[in-house]
Length: 98
Image (cartoon, rainbow, N blue to C red; front, side):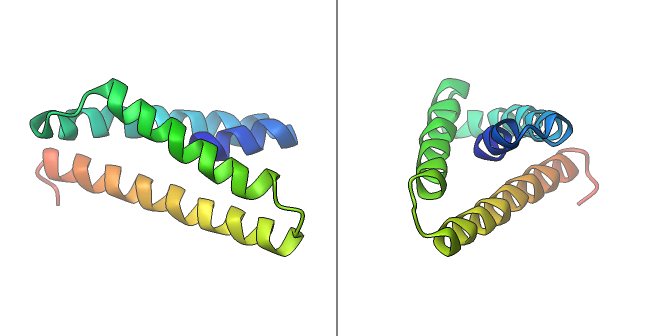
């Protein structure tokens, strides 16, 4: 989600960046609650997000092959959507609506 936000900032799409940022904050909040029983801290989750963002952006921005960069963006979007689906499932489970 952070990588998606960074891409929107790069392209100047402020509305999409704000949406990505809100989704990211929501995911971190939900992930923190569900990670606590596993002994994971919010710091550890943030470090994991930073590492994945660096990897995702590197695959996109340092690739001279436009088709490969586009494929990396598509993969990033799939991962972003999967993260949101996971957070929604966790919230539904926590609210007893799964």
